[in-house]
Length: 179
Image 1 (cartoon, rainbow, N blue to C red):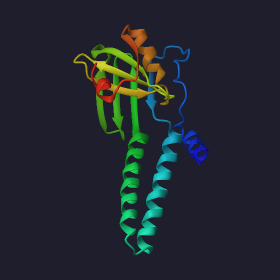
Image 2 (image 1 turned 30 degrees about the vertical axis):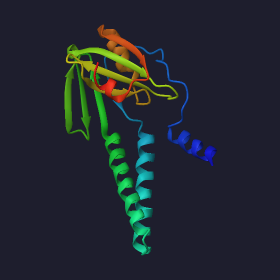
Image 3 (image 1 turned 90 degrees about the vertical axis):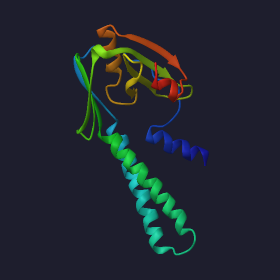
Image 4 (image 1 turned 180 degrees about the vertical axis):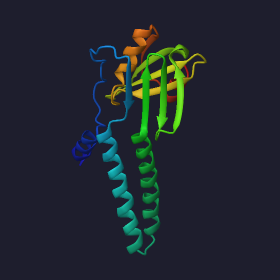
């Protein structure tokens, strides 16, 4: 059973392994970073199936277990909402600005001149690297993972603009939020 769970996680891209290293890439003056579309579509489909199956079970089963199905429906709906949000996330980079947006409407613009540091954080037994950009007050303005499309170009652009890049290991979320 454990091997089956590992196979499913590997297919969905959640397999553990050694952290990725920055590939040898050329500088790009502008690019977009977004979540892996295939992975997001699979997550949306799986969460929709979970909500649908437990909704059907809710209708046809009239015992006390019915409330357990309601719990799974709520959890599946939350997973569906989070999957749709991750599908709509987009971050546009150019040599002057960074524009974060969800669904194309919740936009936040950050100037490169406000970025003071970039952290590449590797966590033990995780395959993906967290790339965090910090503004002058020490807060994390943008955080990306290396499994996102074009995420490594953000580090390359920071190198090109002369911004300090720190490599760290095993930071908690609280430590990652502040520089």
